[in-house]
Image (cartoon, helix red, strand yellow):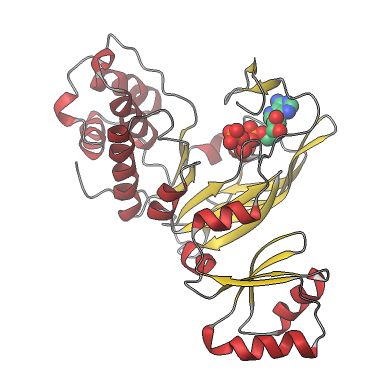
Length: 338
Ligand code: ATP
């Protein structure tokens, strides 16, 4: 597998976000699927987007890709307004959002060649991406003979063919066997290590923790936690506080430099409290007369943060028999399954 791969840099915008999502809201009829979601993705960062089924992840990805029109909000890709000039903005994006479809009777290289022609990418780049995804040796074999993991890697090769600034991967290890999962995960790690900006949507929390620099957790269409993984997990300084006055604790966080709000869900707040400030924290709760219903301290893992900030199921109430497939097709499902 090739080790070096540098996407085209954002010209003159070292500090500029590759992706900016501001106040994006999407309703399906009266159902609010995405509610005022904002986040940004800096160049070289790998953002893991997490959330239970129905949290709104695919809807957000589809709004970024111009497949779903939001009711409100702004999306900028490489500084370009994606709602005004989708074509230009999407030139900077490579995406894997659905199980890849290739011509099974053509080789890996021939399949990429078709895409390269469409995108005006030189032949040399095909060899580069085949190496990058570790398929150089199988490039001349028919895709019909490839394993699912190899097809997924070929799909990632196709997505980065035109050196996009932003790579969007929606559940890239879904349905793969453990070997395939490791192959694809290693590939993503390699891309990330080489500076590729990635938005990764996944249910595999361990994968996100291993691969991503930042995380965004959604629940029922809302952002419930976001930030750098290291900061969010905050080592062993995480405190969970249940109180009937969460707004007062939020105000305290805003006024107290060492006290940080990591995430919240109703009256349960996740706070980062440095171990050197434990006594001060207890004192603060007393002097401010914050009623404490529950207070616990633990080392935070992404899994715990996820479970504590999200509901058991993001499923909408009422009739949930029809679900949309990734690219807009509707299909019948049972219960909470997609
Ligand atoms: P999963 O993890 O299952 O892929 P998700 O986080 O990607 O879920 P979305 O697919 O974005 O969630 O769906 C968010 C909510 O919007 C769900 O309740 C879903 O049923 C609803 N929804 C999505 N698309 C439509 C649509 N075209 N019409 C009506 N409701 C929709």
